[in-house]
Image (cartoon, rainbow, N blue to C red; front, side, top):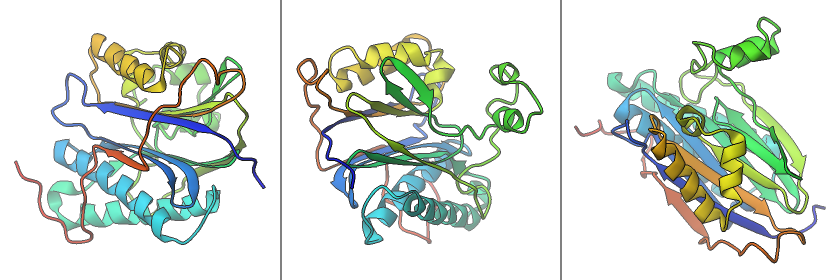
Length: 281
């Protein structure tokens, strides 16, 4: 049985400076759907209205699936099943209207129950684990260059600035089936998990710089600093950040518990499936 942990949660999203719509959707739940915390970040694709719609459907379907499946705990199989339902919902919506065909979304989800973290992701919205001043990518990058690196076709250093860096080989809703990535991690006191859309990297903010800002003051203040920094650099894409930190003895005295309601959702519209109305101009 996983030991109980105390969590601090915070999130923020911003359309950036060059996009008419915020095609990112984010959800953070505390003590709901059978887990202590649920963090979901989706980055929509397919044009202004379609991208926003795809990410909204993805977040809402995933969350409602977990809330209604009767399950409990951070189980990767549970998250995988929810991602399959989510893919079907977005794919069905894309088939309803010619203007939406080809729309899709990334999906990165972290569920925490006690000291156990389960992750599922499709696409290239990253999730990082920060521990003892170091970090590692815990999601799997499903961009074309990253897939080629895993196959041994190109070298890791060749993938960083590859011209096809933003071409995805896996995405929610684009195809009728998906191959998601899942993992399970044992959390330790002081650990932090950060989910974000690729708008942070696109703006030119490194992982190290993002982390430095997130650790200045409260998590909410840190997220605002990250978003402001992205905007200072031009913010060519939407920017979304969601954070969960395990409170530990070493940081309990210096960082306050960020306030978060039982349910908080940003940039999400309620969508009734499967009959969808065409987006208004």
